Amino acid sequence: MPYAPIPCERAIEVRTLFTLYNFRFATGYVFRGESHPFWEMVYVDDGAVDIGADERKIMLTGGDVIFHKPGEFHSIWANYAHAPSLVVISFACDSPAMRFFENRFMRILPRQRMLVREILREAHATFGEALDGPVRVVNEAHLGGVQMLTLLLEAFLISLLRRDDAQDAARQAPERHREWGALDEAVKYMRANLAGNVRFADLCRHAGMGATALKQLFRQQMGASPMAYYEQLRMGEARRLLADAGLNVAQTAEALGFSSPAYFSTRFHRATGMPPTAYRKSVHGAGNAASWEE
Image 1 (tube, rainbow, N blue to C red):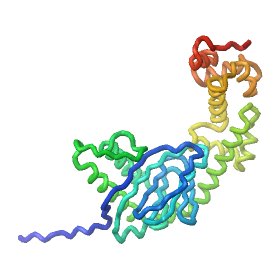
Image 2 (cartoon, rainbow, N blue to C red; image 1 turned 90 degrees about the horizontal axis):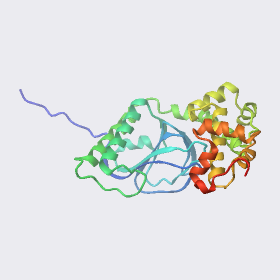
Image 3 (tube, rainbow, N blue to C red; image 1 turned 90 degrees about the vertical axis):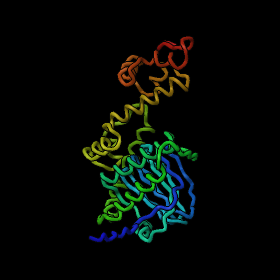
Image 4 (tube, one colour; image 1 turned 60 degrees about the vertical axis):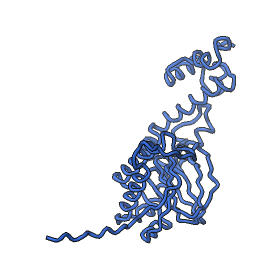
């Protein structure tokens, strides 16, 4: 019997990869922006960022992806308390189906997250472990690495084209923005009051959220209860004061509002696994170690 060929329509065909980054921005980082004549995809793995896209400003949180069309000016602000991790891929694609992604951002599904993970695994094998810098040297021993990356990217884009819930992100965005704004306000209040005078009721008032909702938000996004996270911030400041500011244990305890150096030492030991005197000795050397009485 004769064999009839099966037409293969290329809905999406990526011609060229330009960049592929995976990095974590420091809180407060600002990328002032650029534009270029090819597509760019920004995927937020965790945390939250504000994205500028021409005249728009959009908040993205973990699991969101946005596409910048060729010629679109785009920028990034890491304005929130939790340092965000991003995957950025820029590429050339002239397929008419790419019009779907113009001015588009959306929340991806678990199976699409798996595709992003596969892209990153292939990128590490193709370019090496560091994906946070501009240099790209292809590992020639990894057969077909760049081709596999373009195929995986095409599969990811096609899977997004097939979805019928692309408007969900637009509906969910105001609520996500409110929650992250509340989280940011709570953490800013904590950082401004590290001397130990923060109560949970104060956090709820500054965040504009009820107790149950704020506890749930902190556990989801910060991995700890609000007051446990506050303790982490205080102990982080204690390490800074002991290591960088040259304060002794008694001075650090006073600066952070502890009732006594002994009580501070107990809390520090519980949080870090070592007494503050031993910590200070480890960073300054035995000759500079301080006692409470210094």
